[in-house]
Length: 335
Image (tube, rainbow, N blue to C red; front, side, top):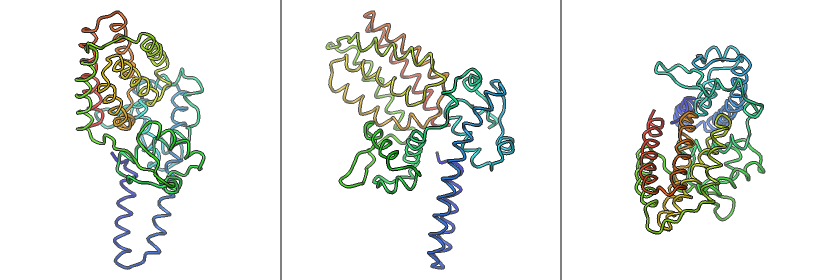
């Protein structure tokens, strides 16, 4: 879903384009585009700072879960317009630190209230590489980026250095959602971009992951599952610090490790391809830390069933686990 500020700028660009196209005043049109592109970058930079300032405010004042934060009050407090405040609030909602109530108000979540007890890492300045990575992901899902993009276009749009861009593109290529073209161009690979295809992906997973556990060639890789168990326990202990990317990576590693135990190469390959396709959709949905903690506990129960040789029970468990996760995540994507 496009952010309100982006909708505003798009509509304004289009109306001015029509006006200047009719009068053939193209010089003014180009000036307007460049001017407003700079304004968008400025809004993003202000929002970056606001996210940190709001976290610090919650921690310093010991604000409790359920406390309402209004756009107007935050804009007045930090002496900025409401547009970057709105973007900062949306980011905090995606992080799970704020929640949107039925009346549309934004309130501090239980995870947000934990900022009072958090260390310096939670309140550290935003990482420009992470910011660029998620900005590109969001723009790709929103249809704001074409299939092919040059490095110059990336650098101009996201206001990052060549070295930073190289690191971001390397990460994207390793995760499989972009690939280098001859020269300086890059091409985005297909991804899941709708709630319907996202749901279909989960239904496919329910079929193959449960069946994989019951395959006659199933052979337990105890060492791999024990590593995943340790990783899930670490996530659970640090659930208020880890990012959406950290949780996605750990969870896919577990499910793929179980699929590899099946010994069926088609199950393994299909799941890895699907995980690559759904990565960005997972990042885009609201990040609910309480739900993530619950999934970690379910993963630990699943691992215990497998380690104790209860394959049929594990197959039943993974069906319910995936069905519940699909229902919960699809609801957040649609909302």
